[in-house]
Image (cartoon, rainbow, N blue to C red; front, side, top):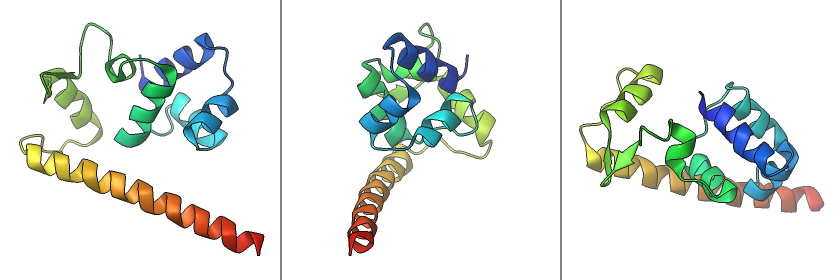
Length: 125
């Protein structure tokens, strides 16, 4: 079962529309629709926000509950294979690289939020 299918199941279990979830995540209904239809795979930051909002463990969204993505802060072999199906050259050997990527994604998300607010303010003028 795909990430999108799981997101949809958990969202529907809460009787939320795609718009409801989008508002809670400060994103668009189109983004949620694209995730649920497997047109897009959410980045780690958005996936984490989705899991928190739906009050599920991120492993529940990423994988069958029997196959956890992370245990003891290390990626499982199954998780590495799942990532590699989307990007066969991704190297999970460097925890420092992964940590750096996650920090960069957080910084990019913050910058995008600032940019959105600036654009919103400009449009109001």
